[in-house]
Length: 560
Image (cartoon, rainbow, N blue to C red; front, side, top):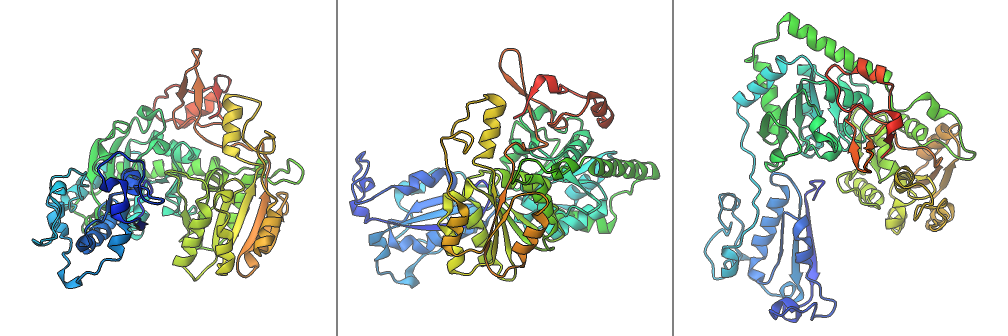
């Protein structure tokens, strides 16, 4: 739901006449192993219904398929009791779903019928997503004109660009505009690292160049991003504070959030918006920039490219050998990603896998980077990699996951082996739950609880034995020096392979947003340009082209 993935779930249910809901009483359950799943999934679906009347099946299926894909995509759920599953129906008598009538405020019931919508549902209130209107050329012209009058414009590229199949037209528009591009935590594959317009990643777990660009800008064109707290930070009033913000989203409700200052809201399908902008740019209906404006934007792009060069995430110190028999996770991420092909599909789990790979991976042209950062549920990586493998049989799928996360769906290792899926699994072994370890150390100190080997109250199995029991070839990495060779060995093998990457437990996620602890014990977030580890004040003064606010000092701050 939060990742905006279209999906239809069809669940089975006990006979309706044996369910507690059929009695009108407040029973927890009446049928054998009965559960009213619809009440549970109502807040995480676009549409859900228990089908009681068999003659509604066509209507419900068509409605579910339509809503799953219309507007902002998302899941729909149909629960079908056993007696409805067994019902004999005449398909020619079934009534379909009228999407046009539904979006106009009607029921969507295609024609009168004795099996029409029950009386108690006719007036039933439900939120109906407002589908975006078609973009007019005057809207695109206004956006382009604003960009051409800006001195420091930036594109904030969100994952809606990929969801909306707008990737190709996005690249065309960005290259015609020739302005810096910043991506988000879940949209890093919108543009590749070596592209001259790509500057970095913005947000709480972004990098310095990306945040420097957004924070110093005087115009932000945000495309297909809901601008969540991960993108604008918890001190959101300081995000892009000197910028004119053009905010595009397919969901009209997102444009009304109090956490984002919006100067020009654009309720539109991002592909439609970009296609119209592309057409307008080709028609040259917007006045061109004069030489002074061109020079200002060229200088701005050069400044951003300088930040990209001078403030890399993965640095020389990450390649220095540290703890015995352990690599540095940032060194691994960089080396592993450099060995991958263009157009490769990379799936990441949670914790170190998504944060470090999001930080440290070199994204190549055509690659996909699949994550679930919106909800970040542990156990996502392995099933997601299986899904990618089913969708694309033509290549090896790369999965990077953690020793904690993989335990949540470890049974799926058999699915991989049983189907000979060419999934290369790189499992980061950092001795437990490293995200929780960092939080406890930074805010509470020792003793640690429920973290892993260092807390003494949580253990993990020997994954060499586990992977071997399932039938995986096993490779292990214990130092930076052997990363390249072992990654190449893993990638060279046919079929599924399990590579365990032992990493140090003292490497924090960096850079990242931090919080200041005030004298009264309360916390305040630093602005996104001021990421931990903190840069010297003099250096920050030179970087910031706009007035600074609440500058964070190392002596006053604690990492988040």
